[in-house]
Image 1 (cartoon, rainbow, N blue to C red):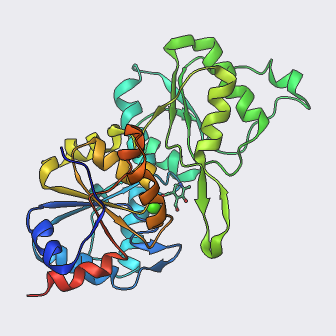
Image 2: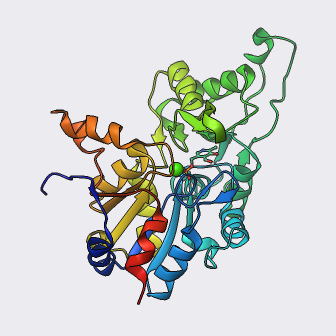
Image 3: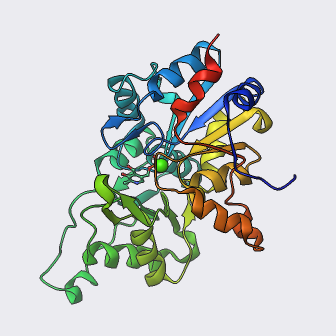
Length: 310
Ligand code: PLP
Ligand code: CA
């Protein structure tokens, strides 16, 4: 297709672009809310879109919440009622991947939090962890001799605030024992998690990289920009990429996935990205930077409201 130009979506153009779409995929943090506060006007915009018959889905790299928890958060913040099946979180999608990829009786060794465990349980995937590392002795030399579970045939790395050296050892040992027969999955590669007030903490990508470094192999990534998370949406709903809009605040995850999957991409500036960054990519000659440029942008998805008035 022709080069994406990151045009501001004014009400006239918005009417046209929204009119041509039957499905919108929303990234969550930075688009619908920031932390625990809804973006002003976002719940009204989504209510209008739903009233116009648009299908709304939620696509998030955050592996520390279940689909049910997202549906509940949407409700609590005043968004139109969503069913858990409209929510595609990297925890749910990782569980779905493992359910299909693991041989019968095989289990996953998991670095993550309780939500990842809950989604694996819901999908019927046997797993060890998440939770605190079970230390078999006082030091690394003991950990390297700890018993391994014979059923483990996959290592899954998600957001794990209790990530530690002992878990890294255990993950490596499963990968060494299983060789290529042991899957290595990461929920996402986000390098930082921005917090309110400009602070940031290390993201799941840092943990995935640690395991990749140890095992000298590359993880398969479930979340954005991987096509896998979009394939999950497509396998649950009948999606026509040309009639689907991906709305996100992050170029290297949301916008890249949308562009790679043939969707119309819409950047909102309520999250982590500035227009200056987009300009840098636009002006570059590097094709991989060009694929970070969205079709359109708005300051906030509340700017879609005028286009949705009768
Ligand atoms: N991972 C974690 C652990 C998070 O807390 C968040 C945002 O809150 C994300 C990833 C990014 O999520 P999203 O894809 O919805 O922006
Ligand atoms: Ca986001």
